[in-house]
Amino acid sequence: MKCVIQRVKQASVSVEGQLISEIDNGLLIYFGVEKGDDSAKTDYCCNKISKIRLFEDENGKQNLSVKDVGGQILVVSQFTLCASLKKGNRPSYDNSENPEIAKVEYERAISNFKNMGFDTKGGVFGAHMMVKYVNDGPMTLILEK
Image 1: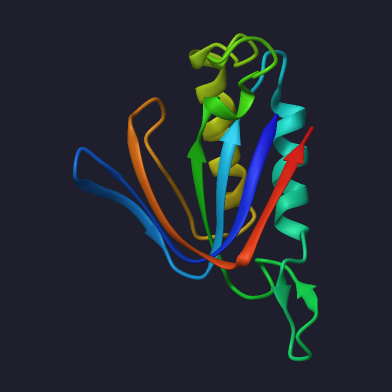
Image 2: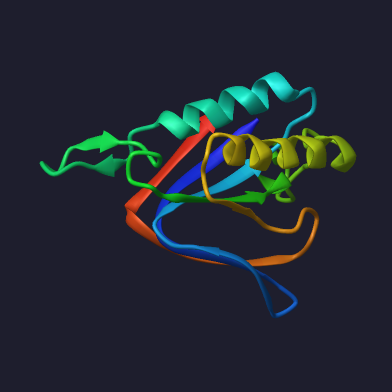
């Protein structure tokens, strides 16, 4: 499982010109499910992300989590995170999980964050999405499990 976590001032997802979801201050998470990933990995990643201290406190030190700042979360499925560039010039997506299984884990991630009390939004699984965001920092981290 691979997650790209971005601290954002705002983020939105559109499909075919229609706004699907948008958040203000919080985290934009690109969520990639690899073959063999399961609910335990999804749960681990969600718990870890909810506690990562990416936001600055009153002293300018990164001591606050998304929960501490009352931030929102936008989770976007992205199978391309699982691509391999080891051979040739075309990405191989052989390590990406079957879409039916990946969708279950993606929806579990959104549900996990909601159950933790976060205002959580998602994109449209499998759709061609336009994602806009203002990265704060910039702050971008990669979590692999």
